[in-house]
Length: 174
Image (cartoon, rainbow, N blue to C red):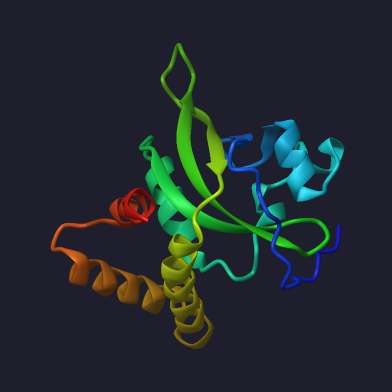
């Protein structure tokens, strides 16, 4: 399936509805709710069994997903602001709560659950500037340089603040 071409058109999300999906441990979609299907513009058959990156917007810095995967693969939950892309190229910004799903007998991670909701325009102003900077660094100097920049950015906010903390703080206060 060819990737859509991004447009500058934003999808307005219903603030009272959640976009929900579940993946296996490798990130392939195993469940998506009706609102996910509606917003993404894909049919359910086009989503189930596909990598969740099917909705990844090219404006998203790779370092964000690197840190997300590092966190959830350790069984830790994390929240993040993400820009996704619909099948027609439109985009939507969401605040996502990622949780690990575990086998009840073995305790092994068997997949991930994500619930997403709309975010305020003020959060977008803050995070979109940071993401644009990270993406530019990645294009010129690579993901490692982007990670160094992000670590430096976080240290300016406080000595022990982590990526997960900044996402939570941005969402809580804005």
